[in-house]
Image (cartoon, rainbow, N blue to C red; front, side):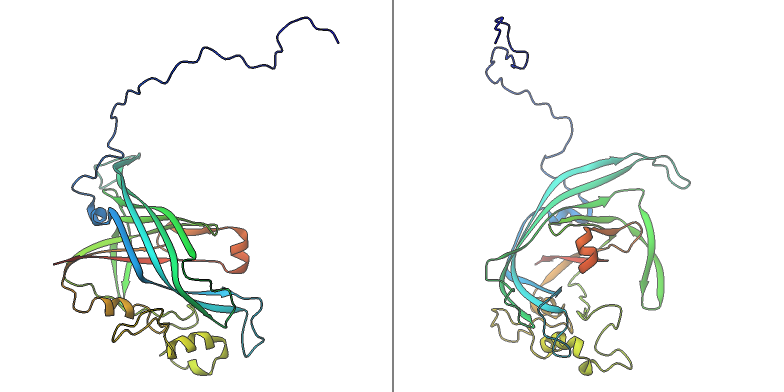
Length: 311
């Protein structure tokens, strides 16, 4: 083989190595700096929130090995008590969305407050019905969610607000963006409210939506439907986790907010900020990977944060 002593063109040539030089940093924006005094309704979120055994979750999951009807159907109802870590970090108080002037508006650009969050959840106690052997042990990580909360300072959209028989218009000033490791991404839009004292926490049914709203649905005999046996079981035997506090009602599909009202008993709440977001508002929604769409598609999400300031 001929050798003409020419360097191989495939060989990389390196210049003289220069030791790392001190970096010259220039503050161009307020990103990453301590939060200012006013982040709107998101101000009280910033920081670390930790709950030990104070989280509760119910989810219906596909279950291939379920007993044949009427003893069972192709799902199981999983109940979790969990620990939670929520870390909220200030990002920016003036993210610009560029636009044009519109009738009735002097502003052509929109400016958005942005707060980053990371949510981590590990279960404390779990059980399911019918029993699957899949509920998992204590300490099992069951959720991780990175996301953003947004507060629109101007140029807000409006949407209908329906309460009972009354319809009004509400400004959409907050939004929540979330990414879920199962293959889901969420955009939920909503509004904020601030009021004195304790929040009004309404009952929330955990029964399957679309067929009926609660146990009092007219012309429906809840107890005679074998499909709903797992729900009926936890209504008659609320999930207690490891809690032994006197008067603790347990976690029941009949009213999943009952635990929150129990926790607020005797607490002197002087002010509450409420953040309510919903994927069915305006251009919100959930995007899912194909497997989730085929097997158990999440079609909507509604979330309420009650941020309570204590005396």
